[in-house]
Length: 476
Ligand code: BGP
Image 1: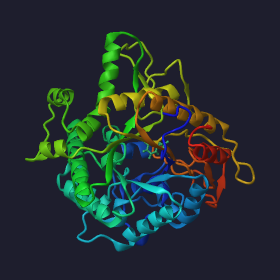
Image 2 (image 1 turned 90 degrees about the vertical axis):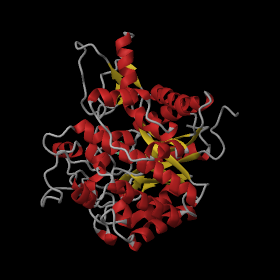
Image 3 (image 1 turned 180 degrees about the horizontal axis):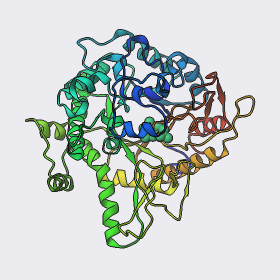
Image 4 (image 1 turned 180 degrees about the vertical axis):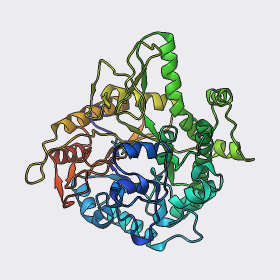
């Protein structure tokens, strides 16, 4: 192998999600979706955790996804800019409620289907491979109102119909699919991950793991449907990854770190190895959680495992069992201690390129399937000049170091097929709902209150990433 560059055909590109980019939240026949109920600020976290009082947008409240960056109307301009950077792939998601406005309608909405046909055609015209997430933090609100969302088995059937509709329609245009974005996020942000709204006094872990079982079954059914339609289709899972370090060499800390990682691996162990692992069975039993399963579920999970492992990597985590050590969770969805060896982003996420190499190795050791890095990047405050130009050396620095470590992982023998950086164009932040937290190579003129012209302009990182792709990673 040539140790200086990445494998031939490596899928360099970027990743976006419907609800964080498209806007046009009620256009083209689209129904309301979970994110359309997520305001900004502190209230956003309450909703994401499943504490919600209304299933309608509240008048006067600002919901960033309603307009987002208007990709719905500007996708041609945006794709042209991605093409200028030389993208080989664009990861994007389909909004379920554009295709089935109520999640389980008898017929799909042709206008929604046509929109994605047009987007895929535009990508293919530029030689960019679409990589599609079927559900990226996105559940039609009608499914919550009528069925309680993923806690209800019926939603598995609706998802199967939705996924099958997509595979059939886009069979000739899309080869790479992913079922659920960051599926393990369901345990941390159950509303965003699975549209779960808790009822008073119920056992939250029970509800979450039942919803998880339903998503795992739905994912296996999607894999089965895709391969029946076209055996060439590649269907992956998607994990919010990031190695957990033990704060000390105390075996109790190491055990704790292992347990924390397994909380996430549980999902991928089922999706990729095809069975509930022993440690998960033990956990469920000890917690008194009983999963309702149907006949054939376990066989289905076993027979229809994923083709590749998609994952996001932003940061590593650190844990300790010592109560004396200060617990800091600020800015993090995954609880994590301060790691004295690492710097942090403005949002408190650790910056750990070596952790990226470790995580990739760990995933490959565990699953022995191709890995696809489908999110990585630095959320930062950008200050543009009068022309919208941003000197984002901090972003270039973060990405250079991560790409170098990804290369090290490849040299370690890890099979990585592509890298799509998160938010190649600025978009709405999932956790904060802010525009202030930017990831892009392309600046979008829009502020936290939703004001701005939406004009796009290139940052310094635009030309840098273009060069990375042009040299297939040899010049980072
Ligand atoms: C992941 C999500 C993305 C994305 C990213 C960055 O969890 O899959 O949707 O937004 O994280 O997070 P944030 O936007 O909160 O900075």
